[in-house]
Length: 360
Image (cartoon, rainbow, N blue to C red; front, side):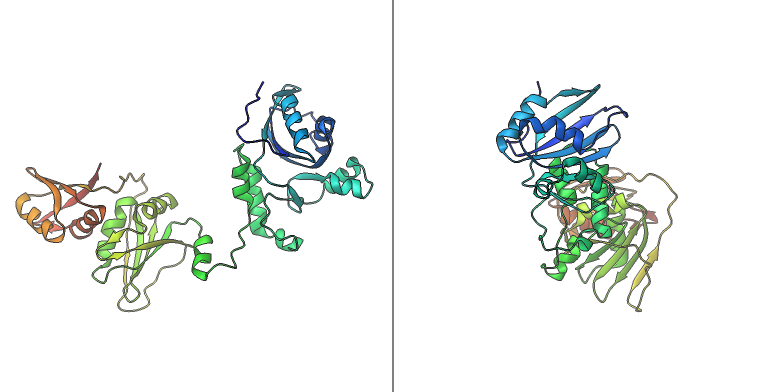
């Protein structure tokens, strides 16, 4: 039962223990007793989180791990069930971190201590899991116990994902000092509702930026620093900023390719007379946006033929359908669609404001 593994055999096993009774004394000794019959164990690490528990067991030999999985996968433990996968980890290193229990049995044997004494002496310590070979063994414990590192492990402990590759991705520390400063900034980005956009075309003004970026969320503020061709856009929510960045980053906007970065929330204020600063008010409501598309529906049009002629001065449509009070455009590219949105959104023509809708 449960003999199919998602990964090739490995000396390290990932244990998923579900619905264990609260009376069960789940610790390293308990797991050691269950698995030691199959061969020498190097290390055990347990993650405890409510009804689902996770543990790693590292055997000294591959054949021991294979046999243990064959015999214990799907094993019933007092009403709970233990599912075993071959781990994707190359080795299991135990260092100091919060909220976990780990025992290195290779150290226990070298100091002639039994597993009970090792467990009891380390239960109250902070035991850190390093799931990769990317940390230098000369790194100090103090460096490893940084707030960032503890936050990574906290996320690891709270994860519902049973895939230890996901755990590896969450826990791996980024030693980014070797990278170029610009690359370091990219790696240090955290999602925020404030975006910084660079490399605008000289022709762009703040209203054009608003026309484009407001298609993806409610904008609270825009600061456009004309001298550096850089804009700061603050959305109502982080999700709106994420959507805008996803669709517009690295896209051609007139004659330049814009780049978008998350920025920590900060007070926006113009610093020169060239800067353009705008504040917008929106009632609290769910914002529904459509994906960026080459199809545009222009409404609020009285003289469709005249408006269509003006539009074609900026970008030639692939297809144009003129209705009674609307125009349906299919542009050759999304970059052309952005030109039309930037210039003609909220454009007043014959005392009527034009509205542009992205269509699929």
